[in-house]
Image 1 (cartoon, one colour):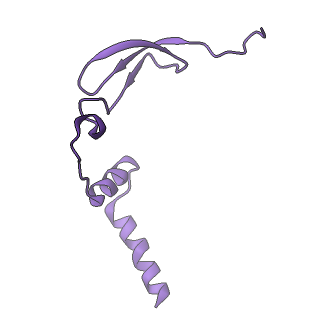
Image 2 (image 1 turned 60 degrees about the vertical axis):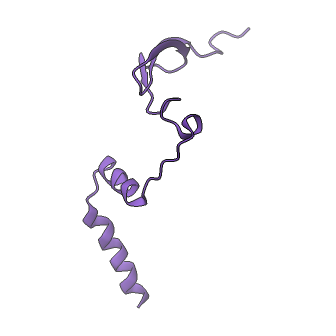
Length: 84
């Protein structure tokens, strides 16, 4: 076999949203991986549907990238004026 062909497998601790942890091997360099979704809260496993309003998703996007709510509204207003 060729040398350095395969990636290094490191031990990683996976922490699920319910607090459980387990150790596995992965090619990631991180020592810990934190997951937001697991079988206790994912709708596929729980059978519960969660409705998320789009306004909440937009706000989460703006907070993540440091955008204010005024910036997006100004762009939409400019487009409406250009159409008229």
